[in-house]
Structure formats: C-alpha cells, structure tokens
Image: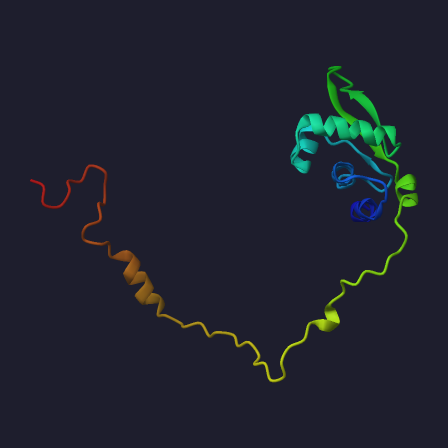
Length: 155
C-alpha cells in the first residue's frame, strides 16, 4: 500500500512542501494500515534535510493530526528504539484536492515524421576464442612478472 499512501500525500491539499516531503518519507515505509517505524536518522537521510527540520515538521504533522507517534523501548534492555508511527490515512484521504483538468497531457502532440527509419540492431563481430586466449597469455615484454624481479636493463 506504500505507493497508494504516497499518492494520497501528493493529492493532499493544505500541506506545504516540507510537510509533504516528510509525510512521503513516512508513507514510503507504511504497512497497509499506515504503521511505520523509521528512525530520525533515516527520515533525515530520506528527506535530505536537517534533524531540526524533521523535528519541526514532525511536530506540525502531529498538530494537524496526520501522524500519531508512540515512544518505544527494547523489551529486554529497556533502551529507547524507534518510535512507532501511524499515518492518519482517513484524514489524508479527506484532504484530497478537487479533481482538476490539467492541460499537460501531450501524448497526442508527440508525433513522428512519416518514413522515420526503424532503428537497426548492430551485429556483433565474432572473434576467434583462441586469438583472445593467445593475446591474454603472452605478457607484454615490459611487464613486471614479480615484485622482486629486476627491471629490464638494470644490472
């Protein structure tokens, strides 16, 4: 459902660019019900922003009710682990922009001149395998064959 959730973000009205970007990062990792648990470092890397920006925008998304987050701890060690976050998919669906007819479908305008030649596949030239083997088995005369070998012409 990740792609469908991301589509909801693109269609949402009332979000600025930073909010859409962070919400896309969350939706990129959601399950069918909107749950995900990306860490802050992953969100920073996914969005290409600073940690401060991720924190600020996350607070904005929390305030708008678009995400809900719960702190988690490791059950054995008690150490903090990534938060469990849920994207409010129902609210996101309700934020969809009204359908708009855009004039950017240029498929019909893309035409090609009559008689355009078809691309032709180049034929590979076959070389004799024994010639290739011979070329690789005979070292160049100035090639050092071992580390301690003296250079040619040295006493």
